[in-house]
Amino acid sequence: MLYIERREKILEMLRKSGNVKVSDLVDIFHVDATTIRRDLKALADNEKVKMVYGGAYYINEMSQWPIEDNPDVKRTINIEKKQIVAQKAAKEIKDGDTIILNNGVTAELILDYLPEMKSLNLITQSLIIAQKAVEKQFIDVYLPGGKYRKKSGMFYGDFAIDAIKKFRASKIFLGILGVSIHDGVTHPAIEEVPVMQALLEISHKKYLIADTTKYGKAFLGKIAGLSEFDTLIVDEELPEIYYKYAEEHGIRII
Image (cartoon, rainbow, N blue to C red; front, side):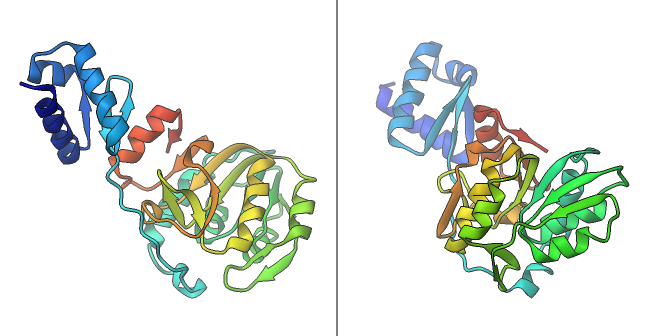
């Protein structure tokens, strides 16, 4: 078999199954591992193929460019998935932490699943999250402020960024609307992007909290690359491609 034919067949396998192993391809095509790795490298240079240790996977996600939902709609759609993510996130929060919950329904739901603690510092740009958090006696709330955006319920602007830079946080749980391997972590309101970037910069550990309906979507403003996060907290329907990506980049998935 010519190498061109072999590579075409490998590409077909990748498109169908999403991933291949070098050891399996050696048995199938009766060539050595060096030849297979050379084939995979050639495909990675020209196709949507990403090499990992021991094999490769196919990047078959289709990034959608949706519009930002109305706040009332956000609070009702995919609520079960958001609850799953929020419960998992709450388990990562320890007594004495300084955490950031930027904005959004999933971030807000985390407060519902927190156990009683001695103390917890919370930094947030969300008026709704701040109002809900002050009801818990053990949480000290810090609201850097700025200009209020009614559609998202979030404060933004240069004043907010200057205030955020005065803080340091142990963990950020970033709720977001768009997650994509190609486009990274994105947001529809371009004016809010610098605020989220500032929140990430002051955080030691970076958690991305997004249910799987947010994956494969992209918006106008890019906040960060997916590889910049330490942990992805998701529900049970995350596409296999993201597990492969996480493995390659040393990202934990919960």
